[in-house]
Length: 191
Ligand SMILES: [Zn+2]
Image 1 (cartoon, helix red, strand yellow):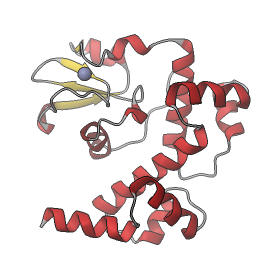
Image 2: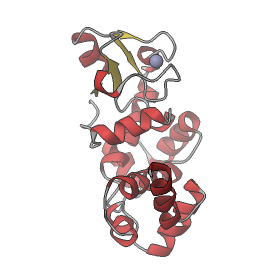
Image 3: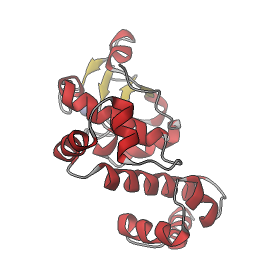
Image 4: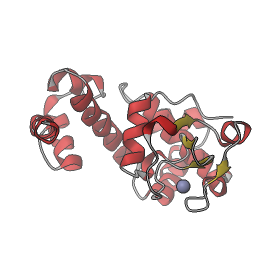
């Protein structure tokens, strides 16, 4: 079974590679036209120019398009059945983050027991599926604060929180500030 098509925009993926965020490894690959190399999102090599970047969802797409694996981040060596399970769980959460998801749903989707999934996920990602889900919801919220005119409350519901107070608490845990402060600080940086 392959990964679901990952529902992220070009700019969201671009943000991830700028942040070298390991949380999205395996969900997409960065192919760089000028070097003909493809990388994991978390690669710490010098960042390409935006115009040279194409995102692919699978390694075989990169290879078919004529790209070689980066020697530094080695995207091709992470393939093993356990890691693929973790990637599929992560991909499922990325695509369904605006819905109410419990561990059981994710486990059923990839066909393993919740207990096994939780253990495997924690081993590979160093956090539980629940912590991961909260983090990617907040990443999405941060992206929307930057990229849209939506209000805090609209964003709160759009990224899957059911209560604003949980949203504010989680936002502060991940970003160390309030959503409003986050948006304001971006405006200051840009002006
Ligand atoms: Zn790389």
